[in-house]
Length: 318
Image 1: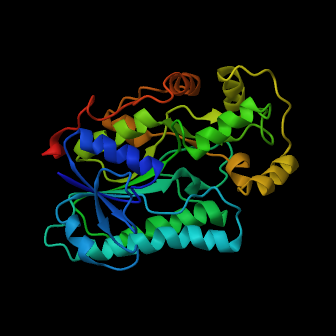
Image 2: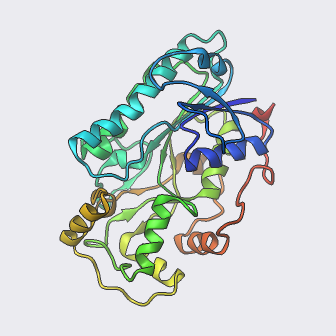
């Protein structure tokens, strides 16, 4: 089966491409410029207009990850960049899907649990409505998902995803470095919820969804056990063998975010999301608890974890 990945040159896209390839799929990466370190077949596109690449979508599995990294200051310019870098490629892919003689069999649309904004202690499943803001989180995510309404495919699944924990990725590296540098105290009040998922379970959930023909629409791709910020930081300190660290009040988080050129909302807001659709469909998580997931990642740093060659996909692999 052909799998077309838009945004496949990033860390998560490469992991997915390797997983699909290991299951016997023909992987195609849509890219603006060929990458010499990518062993997968690459098709040129500009992320804005339908071109020769569109024929790759015929009867394929499409995975849309396209979009700039969210780890940046929440300025008006950056928010527009985040929105445009997601909406324009999605609109181009949707236009290509409408021109297909054989529509894509499955459309996996990346999204984020940040679409729920700062949700406090509410337990959020797939029936919960998106929040009105903040614009760099809920606003961008809502516009991204809205662009998929023009997609034509046999089945469309919107993957509202938690923080994907994987070695040598920006989010995970920043968390472990903060703990190692003695900055591993709770951030702000510390009671904000973090919804997360181990990379192995992320990849396994995508494989599961290939064959879960009854599943479409919104799916939470996240561990069933979100963790509060203070507990997350405690586990990070334990895992990297650091003692107690003083808490970081919200004003200091804002100052630090300026220095690191990031969004303080990434640390100070939270969502307590649960994966009801995956649970109801029978998916089984390997890493349900944050502490165990963290230990597994740090123990297996630098190794190939969860590759599809060890856990093949099923019916759609043909």
